[in-house]
Amino acid sequence: MNMTSILLAVAIVGGTGAVIGILLGIAGERFAVEVDEKEIAIRECLPGNNCGGCGFPGCDGLAAAIARKEAPVNGCPVGGTSCAQAISAIIGVEAEETVPMTAYVKCAGTCEKAQDNYAYIGVEDCRLALNNPGGGAKACTYGCTGFGNCKKVCPFGAIDIVDGIAVVNPKQCKSCGKCIAACPRKLIELVPVDAVCRVTCSSKDRGMDVKKVCQAGCIGCGLCARNCPSDAILVEQNVAHIDQEKCIRCGACKEKCPVKIIL
Image (cartoon, rainbow, N blue to C red):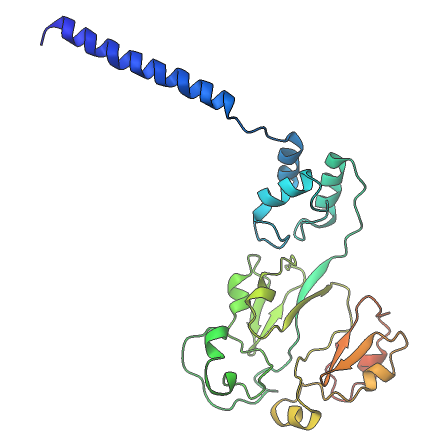
């Protein structure tokens, strides 16, 4: 191969590369997606946990929705008030007051208080355990299985399994809601951090049946509801429910509860 052939080959390759580069540059300019500067600024305010607690696909999705005014400035449950205020300054709207929330497990059936029908030996997974006889080893078919599916999905390490039931640390909980989706028995709900009155049971069985399997179960007697001065308690399907928006935190329900399952 002579020098002329080599130079020709280099020229062809170089020319081809230059043409491709020019075409790519033109295509990049023509098909470039415009980025909303507000969206970028909002994204920088978000914590970046990508937990999905806001209902959007991660922080990028929420930032885009807020920029388009399709989501509220306080849409991030993890960021809290400070995050909402920073975003409101970018959008130019007043941030609504946010109430700090925490996940709460409506079960107090610890190993000492709740009975077991048999000893379970197998995969420690709440959903799989429900496929066993009686819906699991615990005699109460509404109680926490204690295998920690909620703990496994919590990105903030806010849940521990203590004495056979899941317990949430409100100081670490960011109310993302992942634990709620993970619990097959729907025992977890979000309540205000300062909600001092909470029912620690989810059993829908009659009182006499509840007492047979757990010492910490609601018997549906209704004393809490009858003595609540703000009508914040409703006994439905044999278990008490507290409307936290109506609750005035007087503690009358706790004092009147005969089985002491209201905290």
